Image 1 (spheres, rainbow, N blue to C red):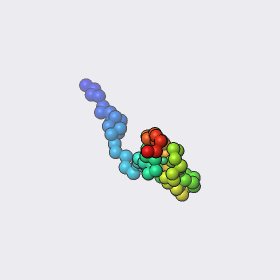
Image 2 (cartoon, rainbow, N blue to C red):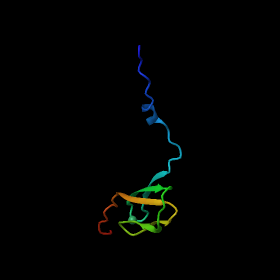
Image 3 (cartoon, rainbow, N blue to C red):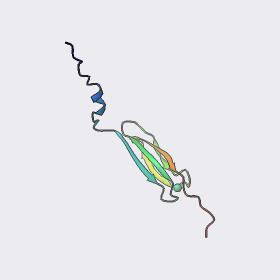
Image 4 (cartoon, rainbow, N blue to C red):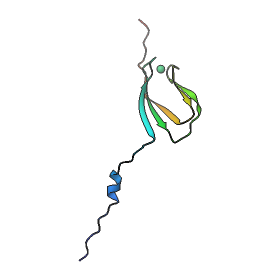
Length: 84
Ligand SMILES: [Zn+2]
């Protein structure tokens, strides 16, 4: 009688990967309140430079180029009505 061999390929899906080189975080612009998703890939080379808030130009981070850092706007800044 043949029995089905256990297929372990599926169980590999649940295997824990240690040392995930991708870091994610959320940044909020201190000046205008816009929200950003920040993704850092430590295994990729980035470029020197800086990231400024898309909405107000506030400097959020300076890159040294040792890793790749990407920002994405996730929360539009609150609309400013005329100052009181
Ligand atoms: Zn801002």
